[in-house]
Length: 233
Image 1 (cartoon, helix red, strand yellow):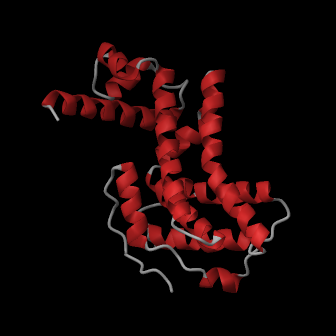
Image 2 (cartoon, rainbow, N blue to C red):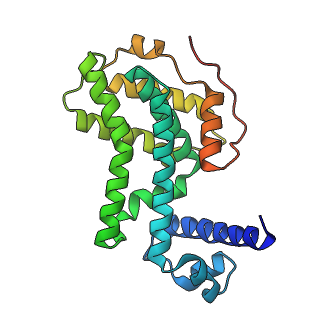
């Protein structure tokens, strides 16, 4: 890779990081072009070169975020045979990534409505593709008699809302490490889906090192040091 390409990648990263930070803190409409350029340490002309319009940038951020979640969901769903295990894996990845990327999560959750109609429809379709993995796992569990819920759609929405909520309160200085938080959410999700507390506690949890490796590969990040948890037999 040439130095010029690396410099371009670094500048693009600066723009994205500045945009995510500002969009999360004050909203898309509350963020001006000049303010965004200053946060990215660029001139307005250079900023336009790397982002196009402000909506182009927002759409790119949202799509990249959901595409990563879809890739992770495909992997963890394919690696587990039982619906309980699929849910536990989906929950663990969702919780960790939302805790570590709270600003990005806030932007995706809060700013979809500011997109133009065509792009908004595209984002809804992409979001639905991600939620399909949860929908399929819950439906499979209900067919097998493993899960029991009054309404599968509401159950899916409730589990996702619970897992996404970690972005609002998680603190690296808190008493629980992220793997413990992910494990607790997995057990709560299973109980919400009608699994008894005893069976939920006995459900094998995903290998922490495996989940860490998956996230690091797909998100291209280095996870902070966490207490490694061995999978439960």
